[in-house]
Image (tube, rainbow, N blue to C red; front, side, top):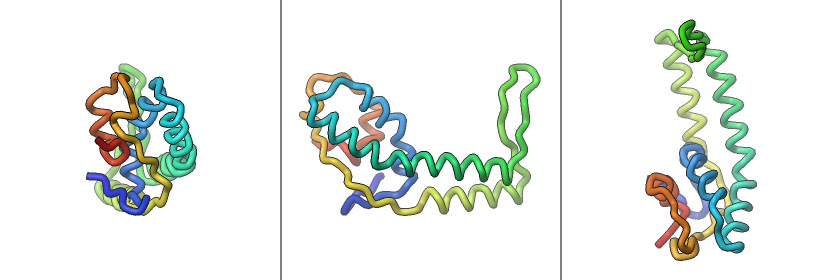
Length: 129
């Protein structure tokens, strides 16, 4: 469960909510709610970009990129030692604390818009009854 006391959360909680945040931002919402959400998204965007940059650097540092000859897809593989280092460093990054002004959005503020249940679950720290 996401802890969002005093606008403090772990980076991984934001990262895990990116899909749902993007889906919500693409929904037609009342202007006040859209504005609050837009301000929040703009505030966390650098954190998300930096996380992805560091994650990709660590993949390249510790992993070996393998291409599937049949379908052309690529993935990283790790030997045991490097895999453990990758997981340790990424977990430390994901557990870092991020302090952001988290808007208060009430379920009623979303109006009659249809929002997928999995997105509501991912955003339980943002949307209140």
